[in-house]
Length: 413
Image (cartoon, rainbow, N blue to C red; front, side):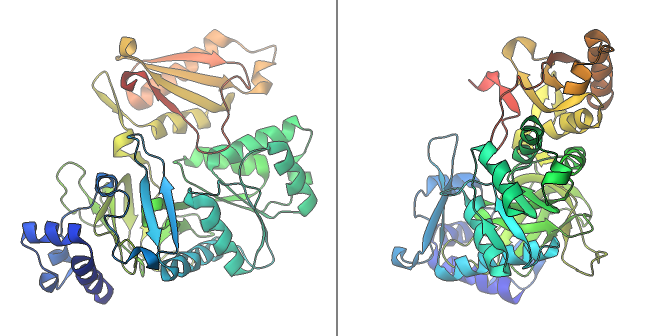
């Protein structure tokens, strides 16, 4: 509460947008005495950052800004995030803590196969790993053959990447003649920047012989390092000395009771350059408040299941891409790659392109019609809608070295 009160006052005094919003809502910093009072503060949304592009939410003069990152946007204007030197130090410390919670230490060699540049992933992971004392191999994304060679030759013990690129690396390793369990020394994977299911995690762990951890964050909230799974992989610990989390009803904005499933809302408690109050993430999850097996009391995100703005309405039914992945990754014979296509002509159906696992595809027992029927039954049982399935040859769907594009919604084009 001490940090929260200070941050509300700081934002009100230094960011004209917050002063205007709070004045219009009849809220002043002096009114905030407890968390219930704080719910009167208006939400901040992503469009606020775009509408005030590039420096409209800065709380400090531009000469005090040490670094700027930006995330790409579908509307043309990127979401710009700024950092003071203190902000960079705070973020770096949070990333080091994130890695330590996942069981990484100064004896590890971390291969960072994430994008550097305006994307926060590469540099965020990089500085945190260095602070922890790791040896860092900044391979970034791309040139997967070289990534594999260096992973083997350097004896890398930690792989940092998006989950989809980690799956791609595992697939490419086998094609290049590597035995991931014998040729690589990976013991831990730190994966984030896109949603992924527990079933996808099990596949990556089995393919690369490591323990895979989910890392949560977003550019607006420094970047990665807001929350992470500890060694017990039972929810993601939110670093609650830096982030206040609320769970709200997406439709009404009402704060929900503890243990409810809803949209995550974050307030940054020490950010200098660009403070964010009650920032709506659109991520849907449940937060648990109890001691973890590891001994930490930080509230835990019980895995992000999807985003409210990722939801597809197919024939009047709400469908999340994560539901599709959960079913597919459980099915023996399904490859790691798939695409969901929604077209104006098939609004009552989901068109799903699914790669068949190479072993099944080359098996004399492979019956495409029977396999299609089985997949359709499994998907319909979970989602209660008809699914049009197109089985694809192994390796035929596009691969990505960054975030995977799983959904093609032709209705928006």
